[in-house]
Length: 122
Image (cartoon, rainbow, N blue to C red):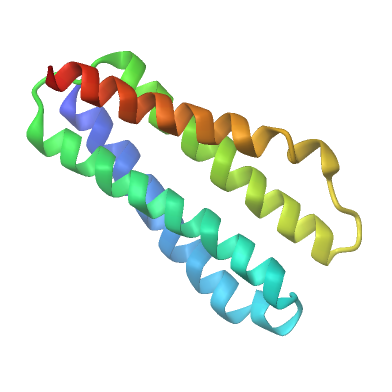
């Protein structure tokens, strides 16, 4: 994966994390429960943590393995975005339960990305 691809992906996820964080802190605060807001915040935090990791990889490594890039990218989408969907649909009163099993798949992909970084370091 090229550094530019990593930087663009990182910046996009970082931008969206800021937007979603502000949305959660302001718009959802009025209509969501404390538990829903905390869940939404978990999604935002994990998205930002991994956006920063992709940013660091984009600046620090000449060529990151495609598998590492896709593990983190798909992990962010499946983990964080499924949480957003679960919370927003629950607030609307029509919880999209099919998203529940997607969240841990995203978490597994994030773990796989970290494991691949460890292996690459050796």
